Image (cartoon, rainbow, N blue to C red; front, side, top):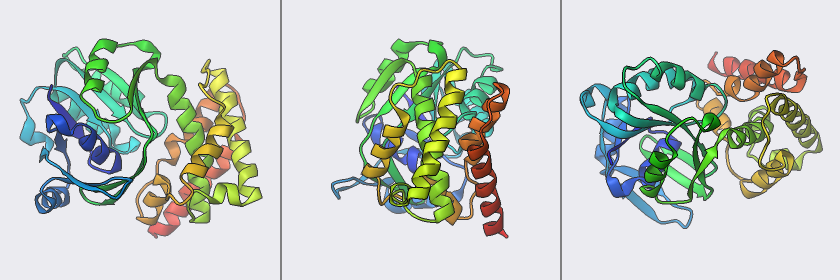
Length: 308
């Protein structure tokens, strides 16, 4: 099975490591990644036990693989870059193949389904929900800080689960295929919504959510609003989201959230796809989400100020 990965950030690097037995192909847009891979001899991975590995990969720009027929293409770019990545994926994946979207938030999967649905090929679009703790150190270099799991599935079960199971068998790590991945995506969205923006506002690691009473109170309100929206959409969460927030923070106390990493680097954050998605979908169901709305504006404002 031929596997391609579009996007070589933290998640893309982890997927390359998990798929190392089949020597995956990584697709990038910047020459920085080409030079970094040549320098390292592959994708550099630092594991939780301190071991270091170099993952051998094929690599290049998307147009260098035109005409290739990949069985599976993973999209691991930021949510706001999904459209361009989905266009590339539809050209690279073979007829009867699958595209798997692995990213934070709500909206990217829907964009990929829309774009790839316009292809003449028969292509399934699946979602991956990742709970590993992973950080991008530099181009083509990542550190795995915590072992979680990767859940693969289709929105509302629309797709070939047997194909996904064959993909899962090729990936090393804790990989599980579920019939309906949507409840797990919503659980992660609500947890991220309660942690990530607060770390940006405090410019501090995840532990700030538990260390300050005022921040924990905010986290509780964020979760309450997210749960109301999920329930209105008919989503039954697989676990208690507030307890999950507490557990995640305790396990990742010193981690710098992906949103804070983006903020510090002067990059656009995914706030519109996390807290902003709760707000947008809440409006559709006539549910007020004032805390998530305020945090969305605060993070966007802070990001704009940092750019200036």
